[in-house]
Image 1 (cartoon, rainbow, N blue to C red):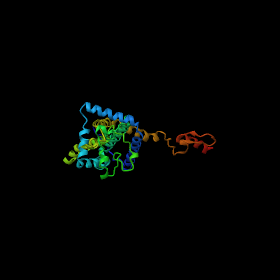
Image 2 (image 1 turned 120 degrees about the horizontal axis):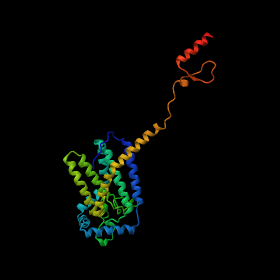
Image 3 (image 1 turned 90 degrees about the horizontal axis):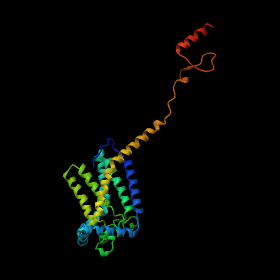
Length: 296
């Protein structure tokens, strides 16, 4: 995605407010877009059948590995429950401070893709593998290792707050989508080999983790990447629209402004002796009029 360069650094407090409003709207919409449980289960089973037909069900062996090997499963649960909410804001802040010319485009890309993900949750509520019937062979590793972390048996939500999350918002996987965004930003704007390595490793590790913990299907991850691609395509038109709107709003007060009044009283109109209505007179005319008046 080509990046446009902005000449002005946005104000940090307006950016913080904007991101807070967008995230609050996203969280509320995600919570409200629950859908019917039976429909969500049907969608989950349909995805699983499609993956098996295409030999893409990587979540099955990964979940078995995470379940059997706590040394892999427990760190993966911590990754799933935390990095999603830590790495993305950290990269936004780093970009704002160190690469301000590219911040606005990257922020807009992230926000648009997130809102597109919300549309996906609404149109296609999906039961994740961990909530399918046990006969399908998936184990909820977050519940299995819940004693090691702050989460309970309801995804990565803190204990007692499971009702505040939508467990059927699995398609697309924004864990993967946001990780891909982080990877692209680090790859494009990081200048060290470590940055480049993290740019590749973080999205790949996130994809493995969301499948191994049975929180997402492989196709959820693919959909998360697709949503980020659509968001990237929509970023430039959205910024152009925002710039045009801002210019119109800035020009509106000037268009409705009343003309300034002339500082000269009467605007050159003078009243001669004996006249009731002022008439436009030139200095020469005034001089001619004054001569006869003086003579009389």
